[in-house]
Image 1: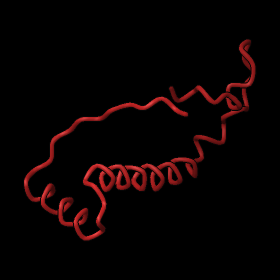
Image 2 (image 1 turned 180 degrees about the vertical axis):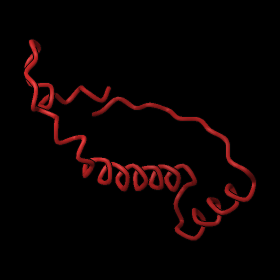
Image 3 (image 1 turned 90 degrees about the vertical axis):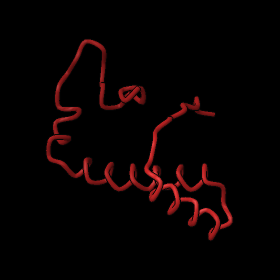
Length: 76
């Protein structure tokens, strides 16, 4: 299992009320709704970022450490 990281932030009352209403409507916890929203946001922008031509250079350079584009820990 992946390590869990905790995020803390503040939202205004209007956004909090909207999130609370969604959580009640979906019969899910507020924590679940916020996590789900973050996951959707990340998925949306990771797909967009991966389409950026800048990322085409990944794997095109040789390093002493090996193939960095094949490592799983480069985002840590």
